[in-house]
Amino acid sequence: AVVEAARELRAAGRAFALTLVVEAEGSTYRKPGALALVADDGRRVGVISGGCLEPGLVELARAALAAREPRDTLFDTRDDDDLIFGSGSGCRGRMRVVAWPVLPDQPAPMLDVVLALDASRRAVRVPLAPLALRLQLPAAVTLRPAPLVLMIGAGPEALPLLGMARTLGWHAWVADHRTGLLESPPLRCADRLIAARPAQALAELADTPLDAVIVMTHTAEGDLAALAALAARDVPYVGLLGPKLRRDELLAQLTEAERAALDGRLHAPVGMKLGGEGPEAIVLGIVAELQRELHARA
Image (cartoon, rainbow, N blue to C red; front, side):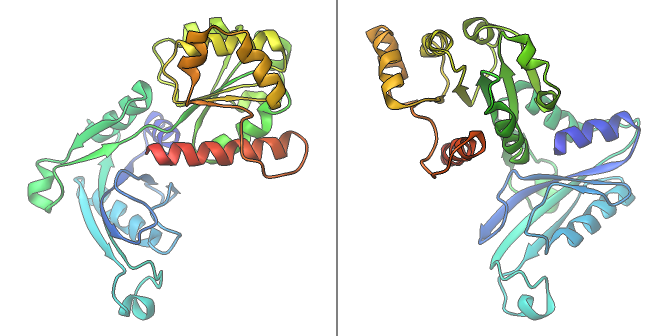
């Protein structure tokens, strides 16, 4: 959402500030690398707390825009006095945040870094010098792209999975050769639609780092082709929709080498067992399991 808002504001010639958490200790809502954006009219995209520190974040952004140079501030909620006279958050943490102004028709190195991160889908180390010396900041901060989840299959689970994925800030792509399914208006909220069979779709994305692939074509042929192709790909999380018996039948048709390649990263049946029936309940379990896996890798 921060990247999308930055692109829109930049294209519209609007001023805004990119804010970045560069240090955190104790109990804080966000950790180093967390991004947020504050537009010139005070509109905010992204958060650094449960809401208690956001007024201070807006003030920091406005100060950076007024000065036309980066500004930083320290949010410290470790003292008892903060419960009465401060933010009242009770988080007992310390967080330093830097705001970079992005002005119309002016170079914006920090914005370039954020956009390049989103395009390359690879974590980057952002050096903070000479700010580090002037503002007593760490030398660098690691920024990580939003997770990218590919759904192979545009069946009934695709729409609720798209909705939950985008709510969590993930990139969500859908691949299916059945163009009739892809042309469904609700699926247009996907970040990308790929009209191709599983093997072809994965071949087209050979140079794209994928955080997770959910195989859910609802056909044995499609699922088998997807698993075979994924055996040759370095995707950390592969989810397969369907019961254990169906999983075993599909795995039996793979080669021993393909099964070995999927071992340890194939989650089948995909998702936590939370109970309930229907696409929404199934997707809730998938998203819960995937959130746990992605967070463990962060």
